[in-house]
Each structure stands twice: as C-alpha cells, then as structure tokens.
Length: 127
Image (tube, rainbow, N blue to C red):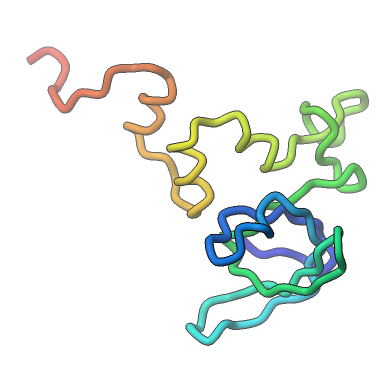
C-alpha cells in the first residue's frame, strides 16, 4: 500500500519497538530500506519524534476531509459519515484474520468459511 505525504496512519505490529503500536502519525515521505524494501518516514503525533517503518506496520486513518471515518456508511453520501477507517474495521475481525490482513495477505475461501461459521471440508458435495 502506498501512503501519501501528510496522510495520517496508525502504527501496528512493530515487534522491535512495541511502544510505537497504536500510536497515530503523519507520513513524511517514502524511502528504500537497506533490504531494498519500501519504508516510510513518519512523525508521531504524540511526541513529534520521527521514525522509519515498513508499510506493513502502518494502517491508514481516514479523515473527514477525504470522506472517511465518522462511524460508517459510504463516503460522499450526505448523513452517512464516510467509510470506516481500516483500524476500526480490524478491531471487529478475529485475531487470526486480523494478523493475515495486516501482513497484506488476502483471505482464502477457507478463511471466509471459517469467518462465516461454516464447516470447511475437502470432501466434494454429493460424493
């Protein structure tokens, strides 16, 4: 996921510095890490400190100006409050699925069946 300079993000999944998790920040810019992978320079809203993190550790926070946040609904529809931000969405999914989504993986058919409470079987129907 690409982040635009100035956009707000929430930090999640940082193992080396867990105190950063759940903090909000502003994106300052994009760079390439020593491993050749993208990283983002961010500024913590709480302290102003600057940190460089991988995109997998950042969740976009929608602002009212861009039609996001504010309790659900659909952006651009009067009185609907915008689309919920990813952090609000992730709070509502089971931990096993949340971790998969935060790694950038797409849920499998089995994941969706598990989420819906359906029994997953490898046996073909009608056999």
